[in-house]
Image (cartoon, rainbow, N blue to C red; front, side, top):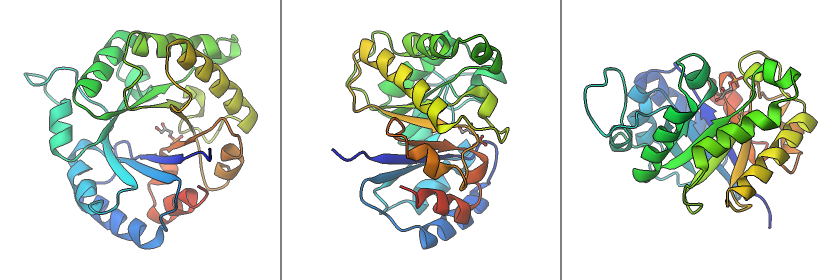
Length: 247
Ligand code: 13P
């Protein structure tokens, strides 16, 4: 079976609705859809609807939320529920992104509650895991990802629409990517845990952390990688199209 590669763009706190429209016009002009390749865009919440509108008729691409709250509604100033994200056009959501865990202090338990809410709301889950530099230097890469995966997925129906993104914290926004071999090794550890938790081999496992036009081909040459989750290098539509052309 040939693998299906997923290219996911996490715009973080960049690109307003107007900028998102301009971006998508340009991206869709220069990108050539390919069989066996799919795309996902994670804009800021206010720009989800603009991206969703731009993607009408482009079935190989989805738009998603960068984060959600686990409650369906209520007095949670600044938060976005799954149903609000979905009504703006989101078909997926990131859960447990490194910046949620390490900048905003989301715990494993809160990450699990968010994952459950995304599943209940019928969106695709893109669960992010990854170790800090301290974990890595102490030889705790696999133990960290195993803990994050187990706390998020233990007892979850293996039939859910799930993608895993392995993003080592030390590689995010630093220009320092994991080597292809290191990424492949971590992915094998993740795959083993997924199997123990009952998730079939079809679950895609992406790599993220300083992916760019110069390193994406070498990373994707590793059979263990089913795609990439890209921050900074996804903010320019021509650069992102060049990365997606590696699929
Ligand atoms: P960078 O590609 O900017 O390192 O960000 C990676 C990331 O966090 C994607 O979710």
